[in-house]
Length: 147
Image 1 (cartoon, helix red, strand yellow):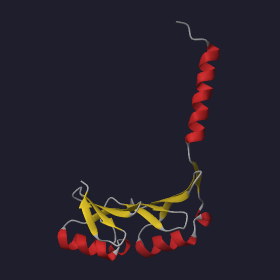
Image 2 (cartoon, rainbow, N blue to C red; image 1 turned 30 degrees about the horizontal axis):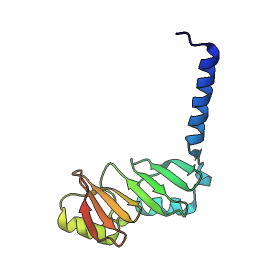
Image 3 (cartoon, rainbow, N blue to C red; image 1 turned 30 degrees about the vertical axis):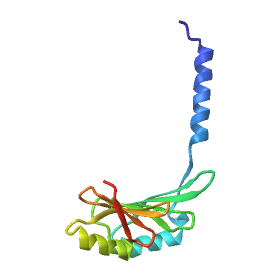
Image 4 (cartoon, helix red, strand yellow; image 1 turned 180 degrees about the vertical axis):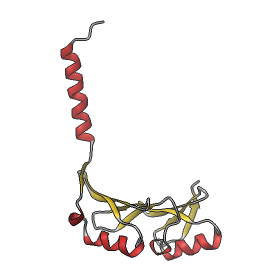
């Protein structure tokens, strides 16, 4: 079977167009373009870390900010600049975890600690250093263990 140059070029063009239309638009932010609310959150809760990378993501329906800190923590903020996801490689500061969730983890899973927290739909999830994922409602009431 012979594949012509024209067919290869056409297929490459179609694939490139599909790829480009399915991608989110990402913008690397300079220091002065990072919203002050994000800078304040970082300085309050992660005083020993600096922002090493800040990306503003835009898609058709939403926008978000993905922030990478020098201490190995990644943060995600929604379009209202409210934190919705925090992932770390070591214990997260207590100040970033909702009080009810922190109390539950400290009471029921000591001496484990929280490496990640996120809001998904109408629930909050935390990942513990032992690999368990705990699910809570938006009020911070425990619902279940996911893994």
